[in-house]
Amino acid sequence: MSETFLRKIALAMSATVLLGTSACTRGPDAQPGLVVTQPVVPLGQVGYSIMPSATYQLRPNDVINVTVFREPDLTLNTVPISATGEISMPLLGPMEVSGMTASELEGRLEQMLSASYLRFPDVTVNIVQYGSHLVTVEGSVTAPGVYNFSPGTKLSGALALANGPSIVADPGDVAVFRQTPDGIAIAKFDYIDMQSGTMMDPVIEPGDRVVVGLNNLSQYWQDIVMTLPAFAFFRRF
Image (cartoon, rainbow, N blue to C red; front, side, top):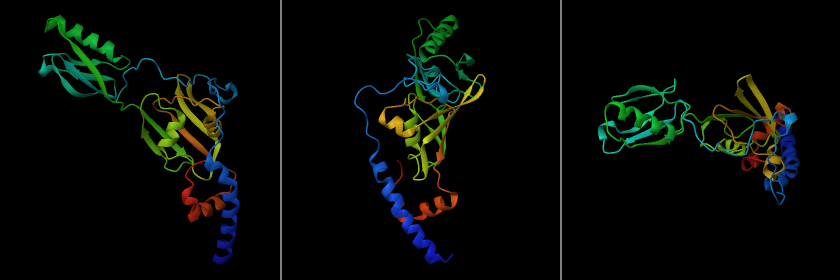
């Protein structure tokens, strides 16, 4: 085929697809009332929730601040938690902190310091960086990659970090791969239904992998469509 012929076909196709996607750019109509919060069992959504955990447990690669009142030599502005879940404190040495809440760690440090070094120590622990919170977003998204996120971020937020589904994405085919005690489990979600409130928009967890599928266009036509200037304005459904 000649280059001119291919260009004519591509332009004709662009007009057709533009008509078909014009409604998608507006987004789905949200229905008034409560959004769906229940998991769809056949789609593997059991165990997913729209609510973040009420308490946060420290994880490897998080960074914390430890302040010992009136003891500047024992105060650490930034303390990274190692890959093995440990920190190292002056006088106390290494200690396991992974799985503890900030409040629990405060109590443990006060107990250890009062046993040997200080009378009535007052310790405050704050989380400086959620370094453990990484999500991989790939497949048919605008900017695939590995992203840091805040606790409580939902699946739609993870997709937003990757600038949303691409123009050739299948928004009904969003898979989340999650590590469980029994192995990696897969759950599927529909991005359009999440936007309209007719499917739960779950909280993601550290280590989740989100993959957005392609629509039914052949790879040949996907390559042509993505080169058309008109589609530069369409970054998501």
